[in-house]
Amino acid sequence: MSRDRIPAALAQAEAVELSLQAAKAFQPRSPISAREFFAGRGEQLTTVNDAVAQTGLHVVLFGERGVGKTSLANIIEPLLYVMEKSVAGHDAQPRLVVKVNTNNSDQFDDVWHRAFDEITWEDESATVGFKARPQVQRVTLTQAFGIPKVPGIDDVRRVLSALRRSVFIFDEFDRGSDTMKRSFTDLIKALSDYAIDSTVVVVGVAETVDQLVRDHASIVRAIVQIQLPRMTERELRDILEKASNVLTIEFANDASSLIVRMSQGLPHYTHLIGLHATRQAANRLSRRVEVQDVHASFSQAMQQAIQSIRDKYLQAIHSAHKDALYERVLLACAIASSTVKDALGYFHPSDVLDPLGVVLDRENVTIATFQKHITDFCESSRGPILERSGVSRAYKYRFLDPLLPPFIFMTAMSAGVIDPRVLESYATR
Image (cartoon, rainbow, N blue to C red; front, side, top):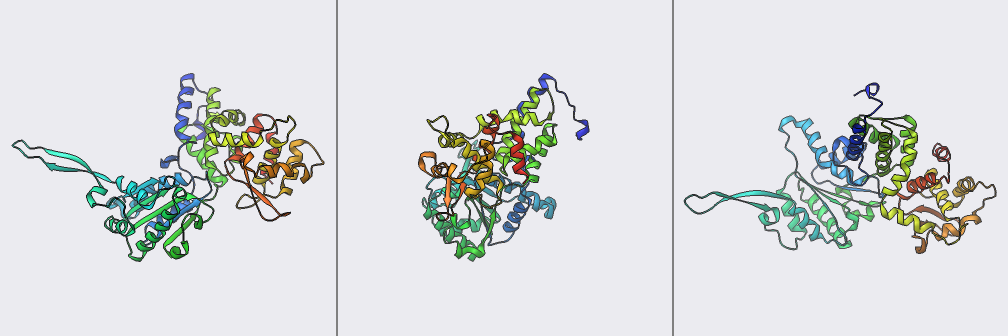
């Protein structure tokens, strides 16, 4: 429906229905699995498709927490089908795609048993007797192939050689044991050496491939490295546009701009704020989300944020002293981290000076004003919530959890600690 035909007003029943349907279009808690709700990442998806199409190539997908790695992994199966159907037409056969999660301290055999048990089919066998009827039983790949209880690298290689055009995706790979990661390195090398037409995709939280795959130098020619950066503003706006098309609503320009800026490149917050801003508009019996709806959504979004994020924030700012500056200094650090143009999110103490002066409404702020606080944020007593890198007198800092700064912004704006226009002015620098 075109924007000029969206009805502005809602009946009460329609408003209730919109609030319910918004939870399907915006999914802050769950990775996106439906193509119609997935936005952006065209370059990375094309790279995955190209890698799968080449025998002997495998994929390592990595990035910081909250950038949408699992959502992208969920889209791989429908992506491959659509891409291959566009080439082969109706003759395209869907690939076998298996996705499993890696658990804490998993070993090599644990994850592969879990993956093989995901592949099942129904087998009919005739029963004995005059009125014999076929007996249907479900068979797993493990049973059919006689896979040993503790499969080794060669066992997995032989199974995959029989599963042509298959794709095995291992999410949260960083949670596995070091021995598991070393075995995966050996497996990928073997699959490449034997030109096995099966693709392994590992997905995990990491800054570099070395943090996910042990001895990665030995398989560098066999893997495609895909770092998933934070989303661009255009990609975050695509999330809002896809949702608005499904829900038959629209976002005012200043409303969508504020959601994008608050999200800091993290789709989790675009979904979270978009959900509650839409519900605020529905409460006004309107299909148009205004900037005041976004402001009003922050308190609810804070309550619905991931519990661990809320706990980390409260631990970091807790103080028995009424005039303690921990809350204000943490806000200034969040502004600094979102303002500086560092690919890994690092900021220097000097970057905190101007934001803290604005937050405190002071002109005489020096590094000594907050040096103790920023040091404390790196200690276990307050999280730690920051990590420090570099050498003395040249330290730089960054947030250990990238989901924290947007939460800090919403908290500060809801409490009236800082004017939204101040954050907007820093966002445009």
